[in-house]
Image (tube, rainbow, N blue to C red; front, side, top):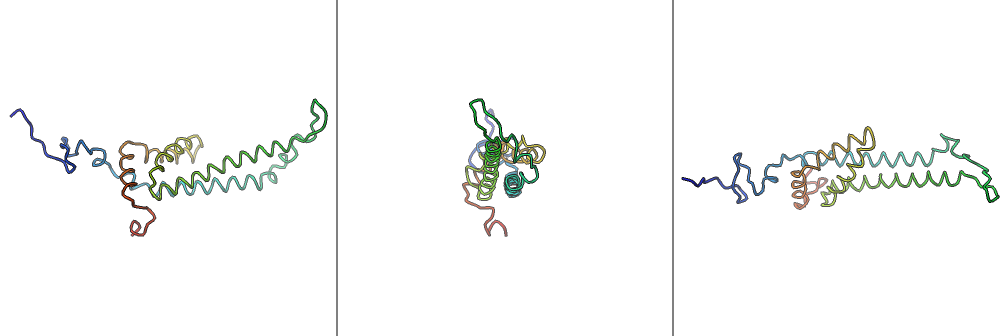
Length: 178
């Protein structure tokens, strides 16, 4: 009489009051958030990466034409030790470095999108890191960062993503699309 006989869950653990197993509660109680949103998330990161690379290319190719003052900024500065040296070279070199740095983020966004499409095990962690960084880029980056964190951050999403990654299913395979 003092011992309650509870039903046994599908995974061998004892079932809670709602029929969800406590042993595999996160996997069984998952709402499918990752499965439903992973393709959309990967597509948005692809678009964001392409737009980032286009922005960087535009800045590096057409930036000096649109902003001509950048071409001759600080020209013919006399230095304390003698001689003349134009400041446009380091300034434009700095813009080039910034362009390369921002371009690397565009490539990283495309790598993340590919990893999410392929359900690579490392893509969830990369998505969380880039999602947090995207919060700083208001307004579209912030929205994409919030969506990324909403899909990938919860513990149940981690369990579901791990299960999907181990299952070997790919989002862009013919079996998944039909």
